[in-house]
Length: 125
Image 1 (spheres, one colour):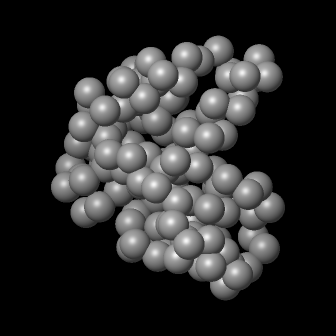
Image 2: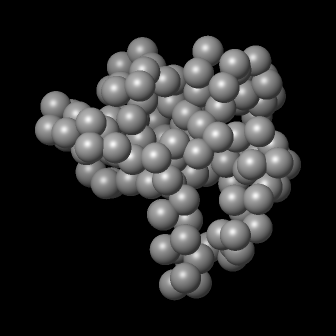
Image 3: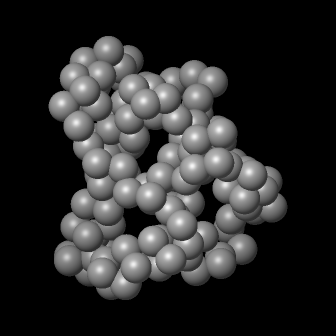
């Protein structure tokens, strides 16, 4: 399975946080490839820069790469896929993750229940 992890999942994984349950850890461990979107890195960097997230984005990137998580760039195809998405969720970063998951295809691992409405590629933990 090819897997895209959302921002919360990546933050929890890098901190070995208890919020990341055993099911999520097993999905990540079993995945053939794990990706983290540049849209999520952008979101994390914005939140860090305005003081909403205590994070060093450069260190975070290093941790992700050391863990074997691959960057996933946002492409024009991903952007165009946004036109097809229903309005189940309004957050632009989350919508981009769904568009990327559908375009690639990838399974999107998330804790955001609202994203489950986008179909079988969304794995809710």
